[in-house]
Image (cartoon, rainbow, N blue to C red; front, side):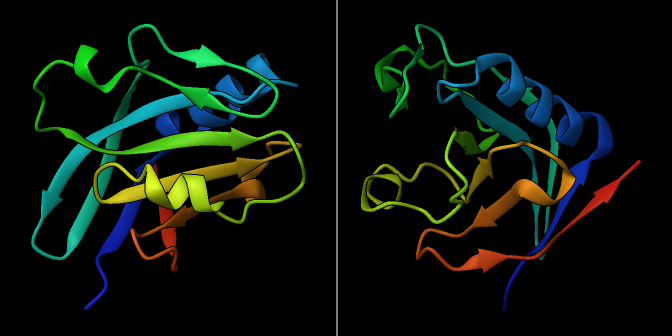
Amino acid sequence: MQKKLIFKRDVFNSILSYCKMHHPNEMILLLRGNNKKDILVIENLMVPPFSTHGPYSSDYPMFMLPFDRSIIGTAHSHPSHSATPSLTDLHNFTGLVSVIVRHPYEDNDLFAYDSDGKQLEYTVQD
């Protein structure tokens, strides 16, 4: 059974804004929230410490992350018009959900995936 994925509106808008700020480079963020039974709620974001942003990749040193059970996934941008997860994206999957935002970073440019690369449906909640 697939979990229901919910983004808080301010978090959803912050992801899009952060993508626009870093364009034409990729950006990366950590998704924080709650994982309860069949619902996954993304409630806030965290900028990974010492993250790097470049035209073809974005990364952070995993060993620098604090122990934080609220980290449930990552979000990163693809400055191209593709939101398909690359093999590298799938191999570096962290948490329960991976979000990819394609250029031009508007409401319909955000896509969520599970660890198998299957696209997840989501809703945005105020």
